[in-house]
Each structure stands twice: as structure tokens, then as C-alpha cells.
Image (cartoon, rainbow, N blue to C red; front, side):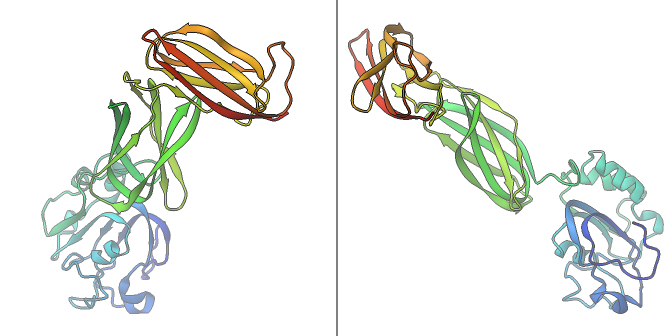
Length: 340
């Protein structure tokens, strides 16, 4: 939007870029309180002010009268409105040629150059009474902003646990991270780690999965405070330390008619997996005294008896008994619900 009147533009929303002359405007009090724009800034916004001494102080005009020195607005006002990622101001009367060329500034910024590179490219004279405020390494990213800049995400197996770690460079309104794990081709929530809100410094996060499989896939669901979210890339973490027998809850549950029963073995073992009714009657034997190697295994029950007949809706019990070559016996059971 190009505004060619003598009025300050005010009360705009989602402002991604702002350039204002505004210098020595004796009419400022007629148009807006102390020449403040009162914008709602879009994250990663840049600004340039063609104002002689707009950076003469970092106290905003609530505390410093902008009329001192000739009715001049302050870059501090833009900073204090909680939105400008970078802004250029001046500590004394500059040459006009020293001011940033905004067509170059925003072109470089939206093309992926960082803040320092963008202002450097757009400024014919460097250091001529000008000061640039902002993180020099910050960048513009995707449709106006990147709420959270995730710079790394990885994990490793330690003591039969998976330790996930990730780092962020900056965060804007970051509510936190859902940690999700892929279980039988279904992403499931396994935990939440609170974010740091809005910060311009790197942050480190850690999450421990205490119950890993031999091979594990994870992703992060980063959630903003307004409810919007985005997913990270997927990582795979191998776990060679399967120390315990484990019988997982069937999935899906409740089910109709098929469900998957998974279990893992730390050692080679001979295994039996039976389905029972709640009154203890044997319904079906899915694995019958079968030798299996160590690792992850699964079997599908189709909701039928050993004779092939569909069984009635209700609660059923599945029980696993495994015996290793060394004579160690392990058993466990869980319940499941069939609904027809």
C-alpha cells in the first residue's frame, strides 16, 4: 500500500514491511498519538524510517517527547510494538543516499538473505549515521514468517531408552511440541514438551521414550499459541537393546473384525499365543509352540474361532507364553474388545 498523504498510517494488521518518511512532521499530533503507528506486526517484519534522528534513543515516545529535535518519530516505537524483526534508524541527519533502498531490501529479504545481508545490499553508504537493529542472522521464511526455526532433530538409544533431542534458533508464540511415534503406520501421541513462547536465542529440548521398539520413527508437531501447527521431518532411531519381553496392547481396540497383536522377544524362544473368552474357554490359538527369533513380532486375529466361525461381540483375553533355550519362561496377557 502506498500512502501519499501527510497522515501517518495507523492501526494496520499483519504488517510485514513498513517504510515511512515522517520526518519533521509538525502535524503528527493531529493524526496519531505521538506518531506511533500502533500496528499488529507480522513476524519477520522489516522497516526503514527516512527520519533524521529516528534512532537517537531507544526509549519510545511514551517516555521521550518526539517533538524534541523537530517532531520526529522513533524506531523504538516500532520495536516496542513487539513485531519488527529488523529496522534501520539514524542518529543524526544522514545523506538521503545513505538510506536503505526498500525495493532492494525487501527483495533480498524475501529471497532468503539474512537481515545483515539484506540491509547491506540495500544501503549505498554503510555507517553514515545509520544503525540497524535486529538479529543479523535472522531470515524471512515462508508466507511471512516461520513460527519456530527448528535447526536439528535427532535421537539415540541409551540403556533401552530412546533419547530425542532438538534445537531451535528462534521461536515466535511457540506453545510447545507434541512428540509423535509411528506405531503400525499410525502416528500416536507419546508426550508433550512446553515451548519458550517468543525468544530470539537458541533453545534445546529433550524427550525420553522409555518403551522403544527395535526400530522407531518419530516426528514433532510444533504448535503455536493460536493453535496452528506444523510437523517436523521424520527420524528413525534403531534400538538394538531389547532387554525385556513385551506384549503390546492390540491395535485397533475396540476392533471389528481384525486386530493386530504385537510382542517383542529379547532372546530366541518357543512361543504360544492363545485367545480366551472371559470365562476361560480357549477360542483360538494364533501361535502354537512355535520357535521364533529375538525381535519384534506381530500376528492378526480375525475375530474367528479355531473352527473358522465368527465369535460374538465381547471382551476377550490374549495370552502369550514364551520359553527361551536357557529355560527362562515369560508370560503375559491383556484384554481386548470385539464389537460387531
